[in-house]
Every structure is written in structure tokens, then in C-alpha cells.
Length: 310
Ligand code: R5P
Image 1 (tube, rainbow, N blue to C red):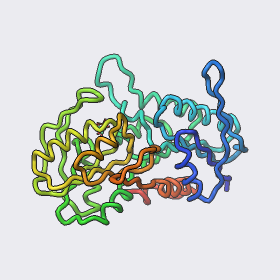
Image 2 (cartoon, rainbow, N blue to C red; image 1 turned 180 degrees about the vertical axis):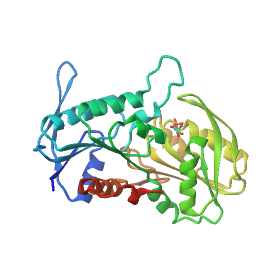
Image 3 (cartoon, protein in one colour; image 1 turned 90 degrees about the horizontal axis):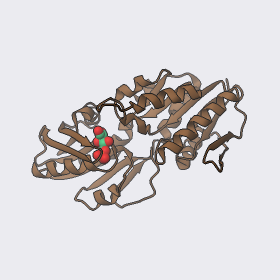
């Protein structure tokens, strides 16, 4: 069996350390240098030759810096004769750029997938892509996990006798339905239209929310535009209480503070993105055990889907 070698980029050191602890393997050192001309250089400071190399890097702010770092790490591993280069990308931010919905724009998700493969990535492990078809942008194998098991485990501790799961849009309704099935709950979805990064409209909610304890489920909360719009509709329709859950808690533009200051009962996300802010209403669930188990299975040639299927 080839040796496993895990390296982490600078995007999320705490998650890398947690994954390594679960795998019971050392975290290999990486040296990052920035030259006077602002270019980066990455040195993997441990032998990669014939190793099964895993590079952990979340594409979170600063996304472009973290992306280039990951590309340089992949190229360095390939150049150092790694047997296989696996990119572990807990949050693949460019997945939101998945269609040409305006003239003369790039489908960034596809371009970044190509860049990763060109840099030497042989395989990708990621979590909750913005839309499942982004998986197909990659010409190498992708293991696409979700965090529904972790999120459902959290909500199982709550009184769910009057609860309903609500997806903000029809695009995420399938995942919300899978989540609701895990909890034995009904599901509803918003009819959402997005006009810009900071403007959305939800005109209706399909399903019954009046008098119910709502759990909003989304893939990510960025500015919170979507969730704030949904909160308005849910209040208008007489929801009894509202909790908010997502996989990627990005919380741009003080979204966490604003959301916590609202009437939501709790906010639950995972640690795919590093979070400095804390709040009594916020619970952060770790995806490190799931990622570590997936890494172990990939390394040992075992089925990953059997573990993480809906
Ligand atoms: C949208 O299509 C996604 O599912 C999320 O609802 C969206 O990315 C959240 O972004 P924001 O919090 O800025 O509305």
C-alpha cells in the first residue's frame, strides 16, 4: 500500500489539523512564499514520491489566493512524482458560476475545474456543490459528499413534532427533501428569482408552513440575501418559529450578526469555511470526521458512496 501524505493550504488550517487527527496521520509541512512581485511559491516540505497525496484547501476568502495556492501545490506534488494527487476542497466557491446566464461571461466553475486538472489533480473530494451538475465540469473522478447526516443529527435533538423543512428555492428542494426524509418531516420550497448577487425575490412558498416550526435548509449563506427574503415570506405566512441551517456558512457582509439579531431561533452550519465570529445562536458542526473517512476510503480503494448516500 502506498503511503498517504496530507498537506494543507493556508485557507483553513484548523480543518486540516482536525482531518489529520481523525486519520491519525501527521500533517506535512508546506512553505508558502510571496515574492516582491506578488507571485506565490509553494514548497511541499515532505517526500511525495509514489505517495497518495491529499491537498486540503477550501476555496474561501481570499478565493483567488487560495485557488492559486492549491494549483501550485498540485503542480508541485505532480512534479515531485506523487502517485496520485487528490484535491480535498470542502467549499468549491466557483461552483456558483455554473451557467452562462448573461452575455460574455465565463462559466468560472468549469474553468477552475480545468485549471485544477491541468495543474495535476487526479481526483477531487468536495462537499455540497452549489448545483450537482458542477460535478460534471471535472474530467477526473469527483467524490461529492453532503452534510445532511451531520445537520440531521443536530436537529434530531430538537422537538420536531410540528416541524417542516423549507428550501429557499426549487433548485435545492431535492436536497431539502432528502434532509426532510431523514427527519421524517414534510418539505416546502420557495419560488425564488435572483436578480443580482445582492437581490433576490421569493414570490411564493409551495407547501404548508403556517403554524409550523420551520427549518430553512440551504447549501450556503453568503450575504444572507436569500434567507432574509425567505424569513419575510415565512413570517407573512404565519410560521411559528424559524431555524436556519446550511452547509457552507460564509456569512459575508456581517450576515451572521444580522441573522442572529433577527427572530430566528438558531443558526446551524458546518466548518467547510473558517469562522472567526461566534454567537450563542450559532452551532458549527464538523465535517472533519466525514472528510477523513472519505479520504481513508479513497486511499484504501473502498466505496465512498455507500457511506454518504442519501
Ligand atoms: C443560491 O442560489 C444558493 O442556494 C444560496 O441561496 C445562495 O448562494 C445564498 O447566497 P446569499 O446568502 O448571498 O443570498
